Amino acid sequence: MKRSILSAIVLGSALAALPLCASAESNVTADQLATGAVCGHISVDPMKVVELQYQAIPSNIVVARSATEVVSTSVQPNGNFCFANLQADLHQISAFGDEPAEYNALVVPVAGKTTFIEVTRGNSW
Image (cartoon, rainbow, N blue to C red):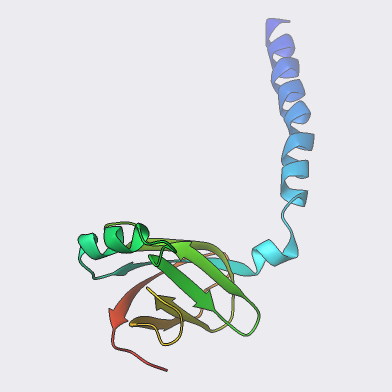
């Protein structure tokens, strides 16, 4: 008898959790499934990043530009940055200024994955 009560409790708990899991999955949109993260590093003196951060208009940003979107994020003093949800198409990554930027890279985010890149100085497109 104890075994059947324990089995009923375990089964009841599992069934009670199902609607929560199902509703969580249904909240994911098709757009979110079609995006990927891009994180990277810029080899730059940390003092330059801090200096850019304290300008009247902070210039310690990285811009991801594609045919469908333009998104920006800030650069950490260690040179790292990250974009969470970029569309899976070709993006030009530009750091520390808009056009023409001193540091550039090209990347195509992979849907559902994180792509790591190194943004280098002197590339122009």
